[in-house]
Length: 364
Image (cartoon, rainbow, N blue to C red):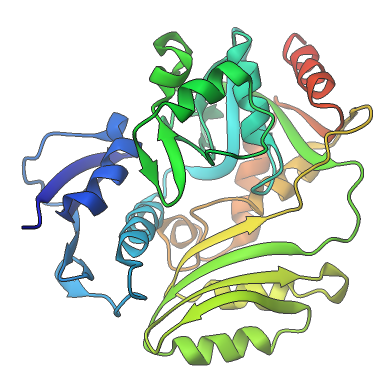
């Protein structure tokens, strides 16, 4: 007999309920345990449910997921429904560490070392607002906590301090192949930031040894024209589909992008379709070799880079609707939030030296 479970959350002021088989919803509930709320009915609550392997939002059944992917579809919908409703903040893709001077945002595409560096800094005494999600209140210039559980590949190659790795591996919780551990259990409750913190520093990470390597993009699509969408992907010059699982109503693709052929604009137009429910861009992991190099950059350069990594900037979402679809106006507000912020580009080198370089920046 299938055990059912229901969990309620308030994420950045928006109420979300997930309900369905416990083996699908409980891992998500653990990852977002610090966002949990009481189960009372609220008129603005969005309910996402799984029944007979079909995911529905507010009673509207979504296209059938790929067999065995209903848990992933549920999670993707949970994240996307939340992000689509957030208009008050620009949710930046980054890890944010905190000292007495304020918050330092480490920003880079997925797989670029920001989580490893943030955890190393947390292990050395800094506090953490969260990993991957850094909600920026552009009017106040503060970063809000986002204490989602931290995820690890059990045998991953990330340069995370061994003490943290041991604690992470002892976790009994997992989500889509990754072990997940609560921030407080992993790093100590004193490490968890619980109030908004002024943003004082932005560090954009890149790899000094990088060449024109394609970027990998993972896409989840749920719509009855999934096969047509795949043809549209194949029609973009500079895109190669390296892995895929496709049915008539859903698709999961991994793309390789050759930026020498400028595929980004055409790809972004495809990714803005409402049927795209997940998107993850991954760069080649830095080698962490050689000497790191830190360069001060203008805040407009930092703002432009951060705007590329705003997780709630979909055209159908509330944030862009607030700006009447204008990315230029959004850019101006992000740049305005950086008015008193020191901005740097850091070409990462040896991992320990890179951590030391960031510590020097944080000490001012």
